[in-house]
Amino acid sequence: MLQVAGAAISAVGMSTAAWIAAGAAVTVVAAPVVITAAGFTGAGIAAGSLAAKMMSMAAIANGGGIAAGSAVATLQSIGATGLSTAGTAVVGGVGAVVGRAVIGFFLGRCNKP
Image 1 (cartoon, rainbow, N blue to C red):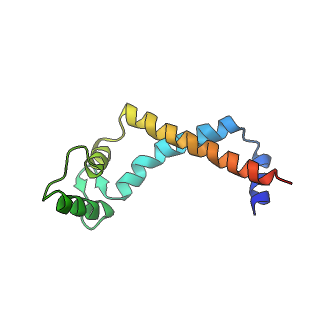
Image 2: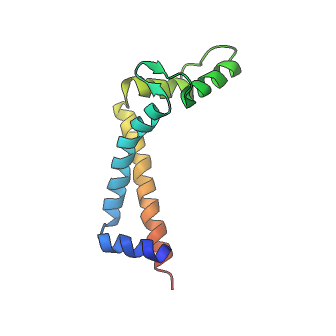
């Protein structure tokens, strides 16, 4: 299986830099989509969603309120307004590391004798 994946990567001819760039681009595009799909929307937290469950647990843990700066508050902010410039940079950086790790894993595993 890994040899097939390595051969596919080699056949595509993508360099390590291309995998890093692809990882960054995919995460920057996917992050807001995933956050919205979880229920953190511009109109608020969607009823019955994962976001609603997270908000309920956070409110119970905090005595009825959501703490400013908490994960729920941050995700809701992103869902309502999108990623900030700094947020885009952080998400892109994480994606770049993941892209590099993927190519390193497949090439390292596939090139072993």
